[in-house]
Length: 118
Length: 449
Picture 1: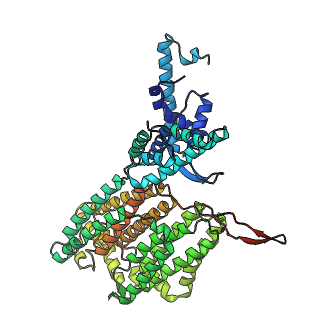
Picture 2: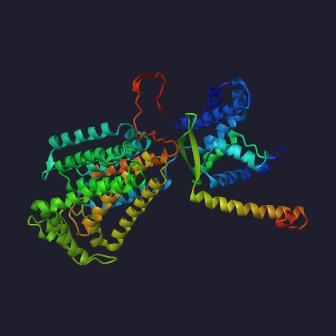
Picture 3: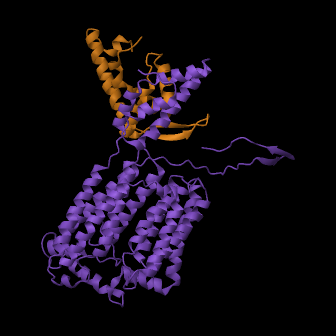
């Protein structure tokens, strides 16, 4: 189902940082990973991904390095920095606060944990 | 949205939105690789070449929007903090020079002559493409050496030394950084090459002669080599590398000290100036007695500092501290410290190896100059040096401004500087070769990236 774009845009950085906190990836790999892990709910366009990645790099949250790939081209791999890990942690706690609050309102006062049976 | 059938028109559409032309290549390459990866995936799924390419490009989204967003990220900009620091230092320097030159109009005119040149040098260094240091390091270094030798022969000498010779090795350090960069991945051969260029640079410096310059050059080159080994640039074993670098670095000076009376005595006079029979010790002695009387705030007791040689130029700190109190000296030293800290921060943020090497070389040059100057002004050593941007000296001012412009240039180009990929083993392109008794004709194109 097509998700309202405005719901996605703010949290995409958080998702990308989370991917990179597991391992270094290049752009195409990240789009595939996002699709797979979200079970095709998130299908990020490359034209959205790269400006975002470059912004993250500009902020110092990720760095990039070129490595040769098996098909003869070079790939730009992105790697999260300590500063980026801190930003990710902040965004995650922000997200949890946000979703708990939303769920409380929607479910008439029930918390996130209660709704989802955690 | 317009339909694109070839990669180039898509990329052009994106890049037209990116105002900083230098960023376009990096961006294009990454996007192109992505399109090709996506195309390959579609082909693997059974699509034909043409449709796969078209769909892959379409999947990228609107190129104009993408381009606009990328343009917002890729803006060349200076490190404003450092620009501010430079402006502050130049302003303070001007005030100090003006005050010191009261009663000696030639001195301030000298400063006013060189100040604009320094600013122009700063701007040129900032906008110039410093990557030539990485592309032709040996040629540049050799040219500099030739210029140095010619200068030593031709230029008029003051007290037996080429005027401004101190700045030759200071500039040479940045070229040495280029040599180190060029030796990445060449394993143990790198130490030989770097060693040769180091020795040549030191030799020309000593010929000028500029002892302080040669020592500065040596310390800076040693630090750069150490950093390169720590970062494993040469692909050689670390412990062996350190042994190769530090054994001569420690042994040779020791040997020189042990074997040569001349070296021993010169060193002693440098660090314990009172012993110098030529009387340079007098100056250090004066400095120390002045300093012993310096108050935190306010003039010191001794009136005879005016008789110190070069108090306006080489001993500005001592003079100002004696006249106004230690606070002034501490303030000036703090200013330089802030600049040095900022320089090393810029070094640590460098993404590319060339940017790292070049910015490190400048940070070291500024630091060592400052350390020598402060130590000299405290009466501890007698190398004459410069306090970058603050102390008197036309050539010194221009050189330091150019160096800081260079560092700002590395900062500005940080996002787009690409290191050339180095292989440790050379690839031989042989069409005919012998393999197990058979003649093999290999017509494949085996050029690597």
